[in-house]
Each structure stands twice: as C-alpha cells, then as structure tokens.
Length: 357
Image (cartoon, rainbow, N blue to C red):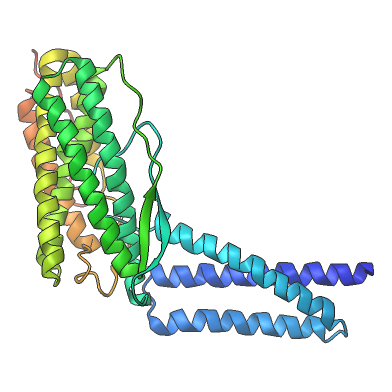
C-alpha cells in the first residue's frame, strides 16, 4: 500500500472517531442541560453532515477505496467510544439526593446495563434515569458502609443494640438500592444490575473521635438530609406508587439518622474531651458546607421524584441548622449563635468551643 494511501486511511479513521466523540459529548451535554428535543435531534444530524462533508472532501481526491475503508473502521471505533461516553454519563454522572452513607473501605459496588430492555427509551426521561442510577449506586455503597459500621462498633465495645441496628440497617439500604435501580431502569428503558462490592475486613482498633465525626457527617446530617429530601420528593411526584416507596425510604433514613445520634452519644461518653474537641471542629466545617449541586432539573422531575436545586438547598440549610443546634446541646458545647440557614444567608460561627467537662 502506498504511503500516501496509508496516511489518507489513518486521517479518515481519526477524523471519523473525533467527529463521533465530539458529537456524542455535545449530545450528552444537551441532555444534562435540558436543551430540548430539537437539540437532541439536531446535534447528531449536524455531526453526520460534518462527517459526510469531510469524507466527500477526502474521497474526491480520487482514492475512494481508502477513504471508505477508513470511514467504516472509524465508525466502528467511534461506536465503541460513544458507548463508553454514554455509559460514563449514565452510570457515573448525574446528581442525586445524597441517600445513604459513603463506603470508606472495601470494594465498591458497580452498576451496569443489563441485557433486558424495558420498553421504549425516551430522551426526556434519561436525565432522571441518570440521577436514580447514581442514587442506586450510593445506596448499594451504604449497605456495605453499615456492615463496616457494625464492625467498628463491635470493635469499639459499643452496646449490642447499636451493633444489631447497624446490621439491620444494611438490609434497609439493600432494599433502597433495589428501589432506586428499578426506578432508573424504568426511566431508561433498560434493566440495570449490580456487580461486585465487598465490605472491609474485620476491624481490631477504632478511633472514637473518627467514629464520632463520621457519624455526625454520615448519619446526623447526611441521613437526615436524605430523609427530608425523600419526604419532599414524595410530596411532589405524581406517581402514587413511587410516593409510597419514597415515604418508606424517608422513614428508614430518619431512623438511620437517630442511630447516628446514639452512636455519637456512645463516642462522647467513652471518649470524653478528645471526642468533644473533634466534634466541635467538625461542626465549624459543617456550618460552612454547601449542599451538593443537583444540576438543572429535568422536565419530568416531578413525575420521577427528583428535587429541584432550590428546594434541595433550602432542605439542606434547614437540616444543617437543626443538626448544629442539636449537636451543640448534645455535646455540651458553649452557646454560640447558630445561623438558621446556610452559607448563602449566614456567616460562620466565630467560635465553637467545647464546654469544660
């Protein structure tokens, strides 16, 4: 094969892959930004037109065989790249309602597309599908996080009731993950399934200050915020069955939050002033924290139980204020003006100092 033909073949192949990847990336961006159905159709059409123009320009030089061969192979490779981009946006992207606590060790579970199709996929529901898929993955991680928490509590000598509750709550999170995955599958028109995921091995030593701070973050604030978000979503969705499921999940998350306060009580009683100082430092961080950005709402957010960014921000501010007040009282922290709302309307507490114990 002449060297010039090889260069032409490679050029057509690379340009085809590049045009395909750019077009898919723009399409995903349009999906996340809710640009509407015309944009979803227009972006791929423009990409195809650009590709055809380039193929015609290169083939018009009289070497159509090499041009077509490069275009065909480039299309195949481009399809692989496109599938990877869509999968990354679908499973790893999106924004959720922050359900569940983070898994800090072990192997994280993965969510993958199954083979079974569930009806016709609609572009307008993909944004909600992405968000629910992310929530499903977070809930699956939360199941393993509760297994880890039970092991930490057992190693720390916590009451048996705290350990057994943590083990029981792992089952709640497993059920939540299945619900979120089912909703995501219905919105996407494609079955989603879990793969992998293992908790950390048995734990021999536990830092009570770390356990207290994690409980404050993950349960007292995180689970309480999740419960409030789920209750709000249940009130806005038009799907009665989904509303019932969201209300049930909200009740579970509220129970998990109360368990977190009980764990915090245990750590304070067993760890003394060192734990109190760690909690006081964490409260200053929480007072400055902003809620996770949800991104633009989908047009069918109410149907699929997705909160708006404004509503989520208000819910977070309210939940945080409640947590700050309760934690300061529970930890015996000196009185400080705690703002009623978040960073948009308040300033950081100047000093949060543990009272002498």
